[in-house]
Length: 583
Image (tube, rainbow, N blue to C red; front, side, top):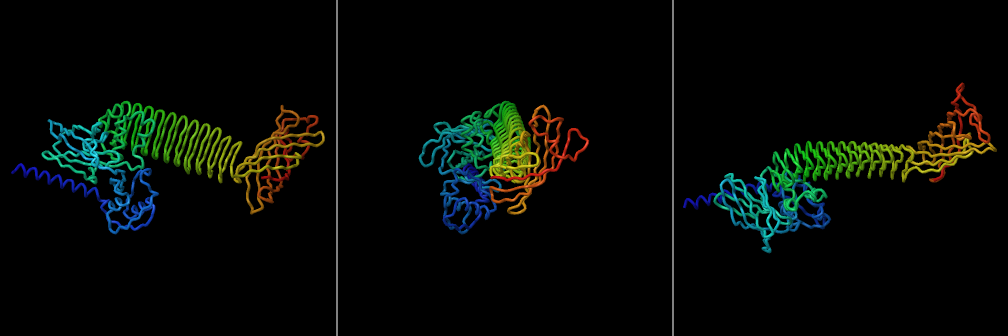
């Protein structure tokens, strides 16, 4: 009689434990809500529920079809009931802080226990996992204890055998497999309690990676190379389920203090002899060769060759050759060869080759070859060869050869600057603005009969490539040079153009220096979009060490009256220009 009473009390305690945990975990899902929509996009309905419930959803956008249309009329339904109706009972829901994670799980599994016995200081549990509907044995299902951070996979016959420490406390095992709802089983000293309650949640030490892609690291080329098949299966089965621990030491992924469960653990400190595999780090991580982290990394991460992080980095990341972050970076990222950030960068990227951020950049990118910013950025890009901004760029690009920005609102400085559109400044020998300022100017002035100039850039700043000639009987003169200009609009038809340039004058010999520096102030009348007339005064300064003219060539010193006296090399005069702009 006492024995039966003892078993009854144990059973009652277990049920109360399950009920308490379930009630605690369902705090968001059990909230009541009213939703009335007809043929509305699922994504819009989910956002509406978020606003009403003051929480957020996290899901894989490749699986949850947010473009599908739903109709629902719910008065004071629980959020779980609303989700079940809209998602056709094909998902399970995991809560973490202020998030509900939608996990695709249309199937149900069953656990059959063969053995659950105490063996000295150990507790051994074995059994098999089957598909509830078909009865087929399920290989590669994850069976794990989140309290002890131990896990195993079922074999090809669906069988498992796990040995845990006997701590005199109830032991909870959870079984997870991709596309199946989680099942949790609690073992007591004298009675086994079986449960298929998919809403049962873990203790507070568990959290979740809130990401659309729980297997980003596993899908990278380095992840596939260094992670075993078992570890990749665990990642697929357990999704974003994460535990926390103060420390991990590992030799290689899987050979560590957390075993094959290491990919589900966030550690404060992680020390890896060759390489390590974690859910994340919230402190310090060092790997002699590499570090692989599924989730976020905080504070400091150092690797001899490479780091790959599936979440975000907040702190300092140092990779001997390479860093790859699939989330955001806020801090400093240093690598000898290459830094890659899939989302946004806020801080400093420094590499000996190049940096590539697919999102926005706020800070500094410094690469010996160059840098790439994917989205709207306000940054300083310093590249030995070139920089690329694939969207709007409002910072400063400095490169040895070229800069490109889709829409420039900042400044470019290089030999060649390219932009699709620009309201900023491009400073270089050649500035190409695809929808910018393009003019072919034909003019005459006080020194040369005919001049041709190609002007390219935008109205804020355009580059001028110019050449001219003087043909006056046997008095020839040729010039070529470079200049810059800016146009100030005075209305629909009028503008003032200020231009400064420097040209070399050929007066019959290349052995002497004849450099003409000219400042033009022109009034421009725009007859049409592709034709305008300009005229105005100019200020000229000539430096020449040619003392005598050459037969057949003009000698510029003799053409104008100089306002600079008693100087053998410099002369200056006031001139004029008149011409037309085409295009």
